Image 1 (spheres, each protein chain N blue to C red):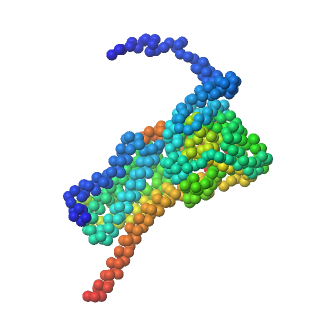
Image 2 (image 1 turned 180 degrees about the vertical axis):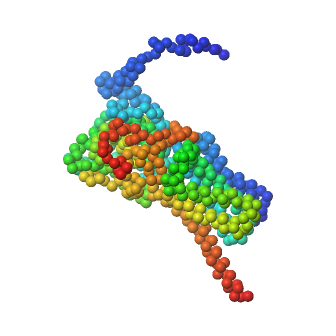
Image 3 (image 1 turned 90 degrees about the horizontal axis):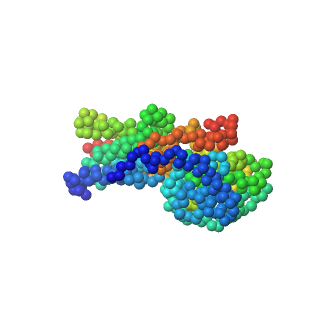
Length: 209
Length: 331
């Protein structure tokens, strides 16, 4: 597995896999195969895929530590950028298919509807993360500050879940929301537990020396 | 290649050769007259077929012809939604919350035998078999706009008759102010009955004057055939000026009450779905605008959504029911 991850083709293969949902949606839209309401289908699917990629990228670190597979870290940046790719598609679908690219209307809509505002805030917060994902930005910021900035992904995950929860609230339909929430809680909970464990070990180590 | 001169009469008939509008429109009136029985029983069936032929039968289910309705506003001129879309994109939560679920799951619904119980404040309560109900009044075809609270719309040729026909028959008491409609709730045939989304059975209600309005339809069919199960077979309500969820499907009980009945969506989310739920572009849903809508199958992906009409375009017919009412408070 570790060898496979280091293979020169590992990244291109993952890249193509991550693009498959987009290809599938694009093909469905082009062949009019997305059901009676393709606009709604595209808006919802791109939102779903944003949440899925967010869960995937948040799973990288826990998996890396638990399975001692540092090679997984190679994929993290690309997976993170795919979160941004799908959230941009989601925002574009909403702006285009739902609002007809009427910018004043979109601005009004964002201000008026709390669940849109929450989703839009998550997108805004994701933007600096995507913009600072190249090596020079990391160097310019310095590792510590860069890491601090990228911890924004935790509140972003919360906003994304709230956006989804709110959207389903009117129909009391929380089954899927609960699945995503459980995954995010698990992945963030692992980080908290891991942090506490590290902190507990440190003082005892000091006491030994 | 044959190139025809453009001034030839063959391509450009003279004005005098065009059938006058009155004449060809008169043919429809003639057919309607015949379908109504004026031309004798033998011809009526044949003529009726032609009268409702405007909605092309999909030939999926048993035929249920209806004569063209004479009720004001009962036949809109909008382009009909494809039967395929109308019968595969449905909200019918007893069969799942996704709009693609009902068409997959509703086949388990048992529509025969079927009875509708009339109870509450009426002189003549009782049980009606579906067969009795179908025959209670002449079946009419009505082309209504359907506006879903979610912001999409369709145009559907329903078959049925004014609910008022049934109400008159059961003679409501003076104390009856509201009519409640209950949908079947059979967990054995409806897989999502019992899920936490709504209180079951699905309950809807109308004020008596709304229920008596001639546009309020008790429907048994669509597109010249009996209702598909996912569309609320075998008998449902269609109230064209209200959001779709007000039109209860697969009705088993109609109850006449003095107090405003509790309705399913109002109980689930009071601040989002009111008792009246009239289509109103000026009163937004808390989570989305109701000013515009997407017509299913017609407005392309990149088309701007069309403006939603007050009372879904039925203001001339139903506006007076709400005269003096604050429609923002009574959403």
